[in-house]
Image 1: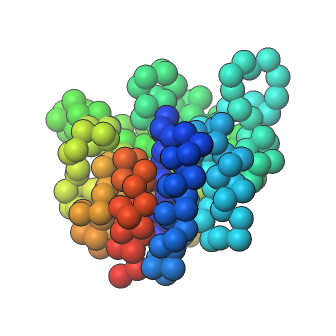
Image 2 (image 1 turned 120 degrees about the horizontal axis):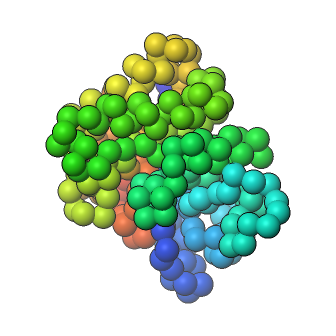
Length: 251
């Protein structure tokens, strides 16, 4: 039985004051989330603040990105070892915003994935298609290509120590959401693709849905057999909404 994971991606939002309020709100309702693991991924500069506030709780800490190098002349970047040094368990790699806005390739994402694992982080590998790719009927081709870059570099066994997040790009920050069946179909495709290579990895790996999951639709999405949690954007900035998604995973 895979434990559900509900991870909040706060993106480029927050201040010292607002993050204090957010974390205190999540902590106050944490007892209502009995099954899922909760994780939060603050902007880099707030990770130490959040780490201090999470001490003694079951909430895991993650980062929104990570570099593929451990040190050196990489101005503005953050190394995997730096993240473990400040208490991170998870690191998101390959988020659609990194791929589309900053031009990060499948191969670069795979190197980030490898570097994160090497440092002891659990990568949350994001995969997903653009609207035009869905309309062209090539969703599975796109997702397979993104997975194959990691499998080619690291081998399928590496995904046993990782999390996959399916995020249809057309449903991120748009208010649109894939229907539970649309999401399940892609999750099942991912698990089936992995099963063809290693059934044990396919059974173990958590596959999250990352396209505008919120308090209102979480229960229906999480009821799908291959959806193991959510990578949550906007709703993770509201304690009650984030906790409601966590509670939806209790069923």
